[in-house]
Amino acid sequence: MDENNVMAPRPAMTPQESAPGAAASMVCGIVGVFVVGLILGIIAIALAAKARRYIAADPQRYGGKGMATTGLVLGIIDVCVWGLLIVPWIIIAIVGAAASGMH
Image (cartoon, rainbow, N blue to C red; front, side):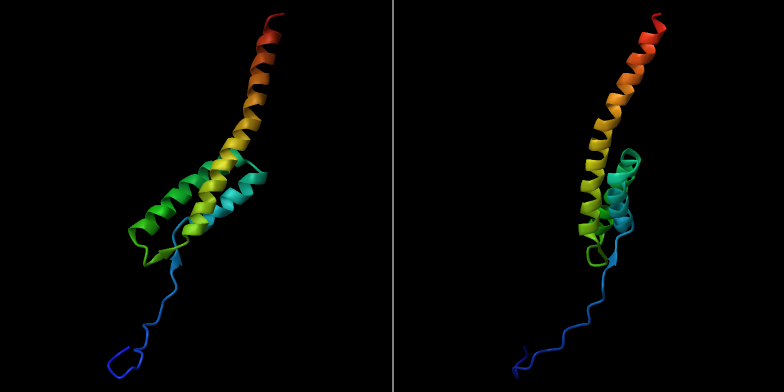
């Protein structure tokens, strides 16, 4: 307020643009829950890290921190879950190959 008790007009707020990679990270994380999570999870983590760096460098310009965080968390979940699903199959294949070579 100024001296006449009149509120000064607020400057127009320009909408922030999403940081590069924020939305893609989230999409990769979501899709990775259902298909090729090991690959998409790694991509989601990398894109989220890139987006978070952009946001940290210029928070006035870039938004999308929630999307980047969602992509990061889902990417980590994708890698862990799919890793736990794939590792037993790899062990079974190795043991099976070793056992068939013993005959």
